[in-house]
Image 1: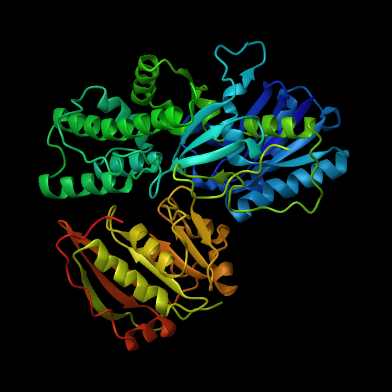
Image 2: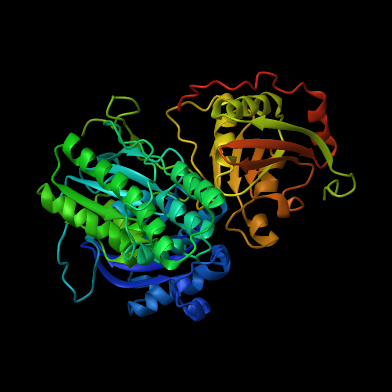
Length: 357
Length: 176
């Protein structure tokens, strides 16, 4: 079963063809095609949210790279939540048009479900190295999201959020701290690189909401700490000080993420941890997670960086599984700015998923 | 198109000292009690000045429960909350020109009765429909201050409301 997946929830316009076993036949993200080639595909400019202009070329490119015609596809999956209303509508209406014209089944997919399943994707001819097995605890950390999930299976009703940031997402904290320190964009890789040369104990960076058993997190205060640190002590005078400040900041953030993730795994008695989201590309973060998971006997699965950021393949895969179990959406499918995943806290607050049918 | 912005001079309403989180929360409650459908509040101030925090206190005062997170929209751009009137929290930090603001449909949401709180929105007052209450947050050391400025006739009406008078510092101002 080969499914066309379409993603347009925020900045990237993306399309991909994937099979229901997770094999990727093609994967096109608009910020990486010729238009953005001069930037090396690194900077997903906001202008790429100009989805209307990009979506059809991206879909055609995905089909042609998979050597398929639209008529040879078995179904269409599209992100229908959460995201920007206008951006989501472009993808959803395109999917409806294609599905109607080619007479194919189509299904709307929650963007976060796609991210949570990204570790099952693999390139054609490249068998997956380590695959996650259900159930697992997943940390999604990106510019817009930072949350922990329990994933019992591949469908939305088998996933729930255990905790997350109360204010800024981790990627956002990295970018803003980089900006405060006069470093470039995107901030994550730059800080990661500098941090590798610095002393993580040089500056005493606070770790808000670190203690206790709560799985909630906060990163806004760390950013504000760096702002006031720069305001009082000035920008770091030399490379050494800059590297030390970056290392201290990064260590504070990573310690919080590792601690909360391990706490979630222990609380849920789950021994597999999956990372996702753009921040999972951070080398310091990967190393800390590897060490911590080794120490506590947990299995760690980290997808390739391009599977961590927004892409069409994860949407196609999540949609393929939905189509395989018979889910079909009608042409009146709407979009929503909110996720369908439920959230429940350790203290028992929040909604609970319905018990399995 | 509404061109009121620019035809009236900016009017400074007041400057409020915000030495504590509680003081900022009080200002948020005051804003929440005063907003009417279609209002535009634009928040300015550097990174860490408290724009998201202030908007969160507005959201809480408008009835967004503690189980719903009010997080920074820097990357996600627009967050909506089911309040009456509807609260829309936007962040134009990553936006580089007015046509991108148009794509976010913020002016349309406002026309449909939403209340807009926009971070980093000062360069795009026209695209947002003008007539804004500017809340300029400044950070000096651990303390903050907010200067309220009206850029249109509706926003000027804020000056007729009594400012929150209990902006006293409590030594043990705890985190919530």
